[in-house]
Length: 153
Image (cartoon, rainbow, N blue to C red; front, side):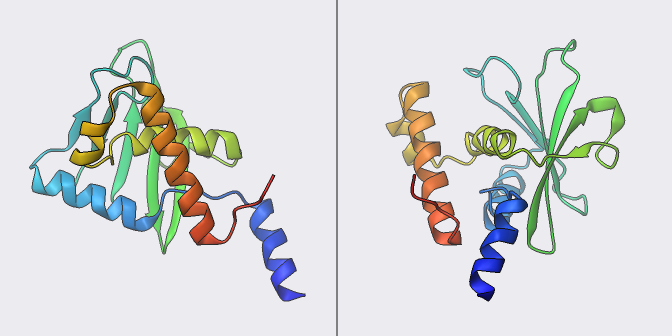
């Protein structure tokens, strides 16, 4: 009975499929490359730039658009093993932005972040955006399956 109750609690509180290990690996990549910002030239729209200060604590990743008219920003952070997305306006700052609770929005933000986590071999295999979307869907499926929250439809 406790298992059913736990599953019901998990379904009420959607969580990110991005893991703390993925955030840690991204931090290591930025630190190793001596950079705090990456951009995807082929992605036109929100999320084409990611910024994170590797010396800041807590480590917070920002996704945004480099167009000055687009003021939206998404923040990805991990605290005590819990991954959290926040979304708002750049001028508001991290603490004032709302926590994202909509499962579709969380999945969308996860997929944007995962564009930056693809390995070099995966990037070589990926030639079109549809292949990246397939890769993200496969990774989400695998992570949810490992977390035990995958539901058959």
